[in-house]
Image (cartoon, rainbow, N blue to C red; front, top):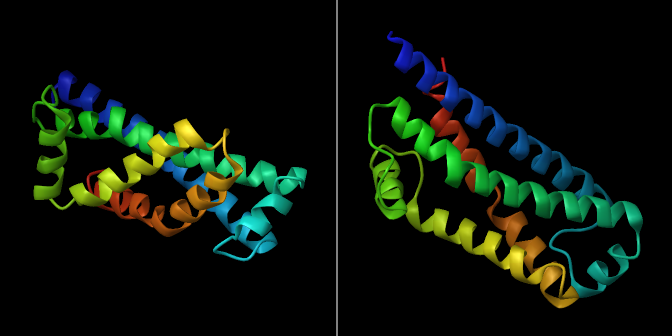
Length: 158
């Protein structure tokens, strides 16, 4: 393996590890949160939860780690993976997603749902208690998609 190949491999492994760590912390926060509050959460439960420092900390951790997992995968891991595979990552993001879908790493439509949730978090979570519980429930319903993506990518980690 050439020096360039080793550098690209290491870069992919590093970004993959970072995304995987964010995801594991997301899972842990969801497990702890769901031990305290029934899922899906209602607006009433959410209103009580934001008054509980521990519950609020878990909710914030869930929101933060969901966003970080999505950001790390989309901004670094996918491009590092394609580079490591000898493919050109310098193209429109939709082309990158379509390529990853062709090799069974992800489903493009599912990725756009994850991205939409992440965008909603950035705009609505802090500003609206009404949206807060809805966003958390959306995360609870979709965060498993990250696991599928990470599992598919892990086949390329040696």
